[in-house]
Length: 350
Ligand SMILES: Cc1cc2nc3c(=O)[nH]c(=O)nc-3n(C[C@H](O)[C@H](O)[C@H](O)COP(=O)(O)O)c2cc1C
Image (cartoon, rainbow, N blue to C red; front, side, top):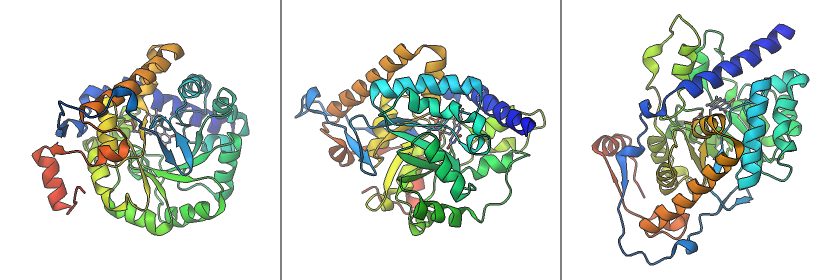
């Protein structure tokens, strides 16, 4: 038992260390293949821009959130504490990392619940994998008095890990049972490989209302899993999956019925605005904030988030959009390979 606890804690620490070592500049997202059209005579002032929105009845003024990462070890408890303070000061929602460790080993629960301790009134999301039992999902929500539950889909990561899962066909029925039995909104998310129209169609049919496409372009678990071991496994998969831009385009037809969230490779306020323009209701960041908070302190990370949001509003003025709805109607020019993706996948932008 003790050995299993140690292995889980060690695995989480290794994920965080390798994620910190990844250089996002080497990770190609498709945000650079998408361009806003500059507007030289805006009809709005900066202080009129309102990018507020909601996820499942939870209202927020800043459409950003800290996406799932840590918990399960003493190092990652300290990261959760720091990010929790950033979330509390800036008012942005925060998800904790996968809580399977806490569900199975109650002595690890404190490394997650610290987030609630430092942010008693904030919006906090629990996180579990799609193989979790209903009881486990409920427990995860209880441990941090969560306002929402993220269920992650990480099939690529599991298959690349020698010790990973090999059985997936119960995921859909599991998700359905959780949806029908927990009383907080359930967000189904990827972990950096993006989501296709086919996946979202299945999620919609299952009754899922909130989806985070979490695409390629930032944290890359194919590379992280390979960095953890000398025997490289499937290391040719480092560009597997779809970018956040492609995934949000794939989500177009579901945006009326489902709330789509955008994450994966968001490094700048411009990336975040492009995600909103493609239909995301809010934008998540993991690597960017993990790196910032680990290399700086809580105070400067709070300032970073505030400036990030301030700059998003400035970009809104430069495209003459007062709010997220207006942003959706603004012209966008895509590079040829994205146009080709849309043509071959039969995706209409509007
Ligand atoms: C160190 C680290 C640990 C992560 N652990 C989890 C996890 O436990 N559960 C999960 O759903 N996603 C996890 N993720 C994935 C993120 O939530 C996100 O989907 C992915 O990193 C893409 O966003 P990014 O490019 O901004 O990092 C983790 C990411 C990082 C960097």
